[in-house]
Every structure is written in C-alpha cells, then in structure tokens.
Amino acid sequence: MKKYTFTIVIEKEPEDPGYYAHVPALPGCVSAGLTIEELRENIVEAIHLYIESLVQDGLPIPDADNPVQVERVTVAISA
Image (cartoon, rainbow, N blue to C red; front, side):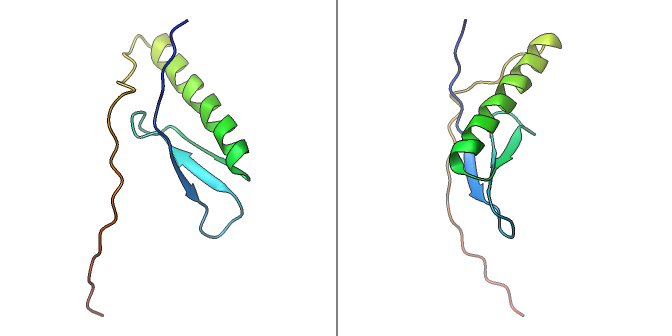
C-alpha cells in the first residue's frame, strides 16, 4: 500500500458554524465539518475517494509534494 501526504487548506465558514477545506493538489477535492477534528476525518475520506476515482479511470495521481504558498495581499479599492 502506497501512502501519500497532501497539503490541505482549512478555513472557517464565514456565516455558519464549522470549517471547510480543500486540497490544492487535487482540484475540486473539498470537504467540511463542524469541528477541525471532524473536518480532518472528512477531508481524508474525500482524498481517498478522489484518488480511488483517478485510479479507476486510469488517470495519474497528482504530485502530493507540490509546494503550496499562502500569502496575504492588500488591494485598494476606491469607493
């Protein structure tokens, strides 16, 4: 069994309780949970299903070591 390690991005739901996450290396792979712990379990399951789908379709598994950089930028908008 081969193991992969993916970076996940976790964000707080702006208007609802809970959190959501996405996996930059796996476009469209997202999940949510009421707690960080629940979210982690859910995103691991989502990653597993995503990779299973790729394997079934004969597609390559994206590079899990693809570096992710998170930055903050400031944008000025004249109102």
